[in-house]
Length: 147
Ligand SMILES: CC(C)(COP(=O)(O)OP(=O)(O)OC[C@H]1O[C@@H](n2cnc3c(N)ncnc32)[C@H](O)[C@@H]1OP(=O)(O)O)[C@@H](O)C(=O)NCCC(=O)NCCS
Image (cartoon, rainbow, N blue to C red; front, side):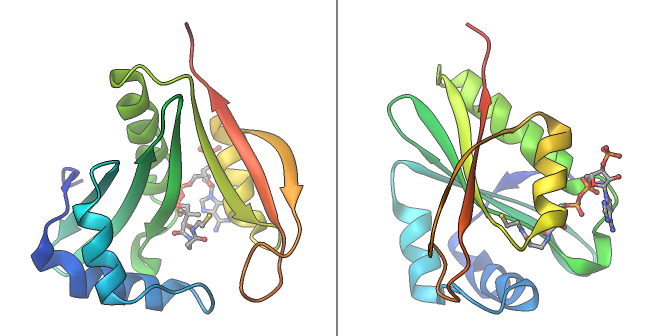
């Protein structure tokens, strides 16, 4: 398995292509990816193999929480542990920065992803109706960090 590294400006086209290969709604454009890379509260992590990016992780650090705003694993490598690895990384970064919890939202239709988060240890904390562009609601989940 290759190592996670911080994304750079030259990764933008591939970050955009990875999103488009996985999502049909709420897709951001390359300009937004560029802006995300520049925001001081953000961290974008990626890993790659000889065929390109295998995953991406967008973390947004707030005062007490670290939010997983995006977690993507390329279809060709799904089910090989990358999702869990990215979640572990999110938790480690949040711990390193002294945060209290990691939060995320997942579409209620995305049962596969919800199961991955639940088996990792995220707990359901309510839902947000109409959160996504396609009208789907979001399930809010949190992972509490030890004191
Ligand atoms: C959701 C996603 C990030 C998970 O990543 P992944 O690399 O496929 O997941 P992992 O290989 O780490 O698997 C994690 C768990 O899911 C299980 N799993 C793997 N493949 C599975 C499958 N096809 N169906 C059901 N469960 C599966 C694994 O067994 C593992 O559980 P375990 O640790 O209890 O055994 C990835 O599938 C993805 O990018 N999906 C498309 C984009 C998306 O929906 N992102 C989330 C938006 S909130």
